Image (cartoon, rainbow, N blue to C red; front, side):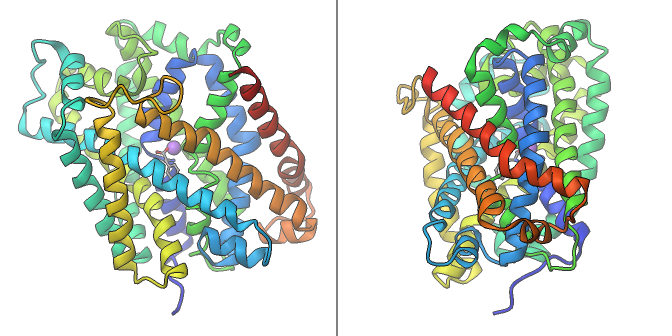
Length: 445
Ligand code: PHE
Ligand code: NA
């Protein structure tokens, strides 16, 4: 069967940006930055994006385009008869783990959208937005319903295919989302506590750098936010034809994603301080601060509806890229039709997500890793461990297994300054940094 392809390079770029920009920029970025001290974290995060993230993004897309295969197939094809393809399985595992909790959080967003559409969330509840949200996510059935609904939407897009499903869906909401975030940021900086919030985000308190976990979290956030290392960008790259140039597209994706993270920081932290919320309050941060902002602002009801619509679409454009990785794998390896593969994987993710959802409530005592609940544990394994390990392997493959001219050729670079700089980064700098950050964290656990 003929491999599916994007209709255009722009279609690929939008899909890849859609994958990158998502809950990671708004929901995850804000709470991880909040837990890690704000400004200094932002600096480390940006360094990770520049030095490790964007160079590896180019590596990943190049591998996909060269091999024209899913993640496991790509490794098998490029390094036949060697165990490199095991890395592909880690990637597939990581997408399943991430999608399991991503869909639960996206389900919360859908529920908020619904709450504003019906008007239920418009008036501040007597117990406040914080307590109301906690009550909702600790329920048994409600959040599972919304998680299931979100998985069904994701599945319906993926089972249509690359061009008419994934690409089309992505062409719709990205620009709207950008406009909305900028608008919200402008409003947020006019709030009374804005100065404290902006200081928290932009005035680094370097003392947090003594904690090795900050480096680890910054690198994990860079990988997560760029959708890096676990085959989403490789699979998307595999739907590109060889005539489409990569470096510019990849840099654009990285810059956009980072811009979105900074802007959502500007939206969220002023509000966090204005409403006296603890910036380190974890994964529920966004769902409590945003309703507070909407409640205070004129036309807040309308803005809330538009914002949560955009947030849900941003989540969907990422979740379809996560689902596509195992689906593409099964389509090749098990010769499954796209429809059955989408159904099967979605069902597995749904069940796994049910444990995540219950982990917020009745199973909150289950803490697989340290004191992390099920959501945080899955996130930790996927983002802080599997993503960097897979990323490291890609860097080693292209930096050391390929020779230099093959590496440059695969990524449309030449023997220029940029080409040399990129090659140095992926051959030496990125792998060494990833290793140091890893060992540093392990030694200090
Ligand atoms: N990058 C996405 C976000 O920031 C999440 C994601 C991670 C998507 C890994 C695909 C793969 O929301
Ligand atoms: Na992101």
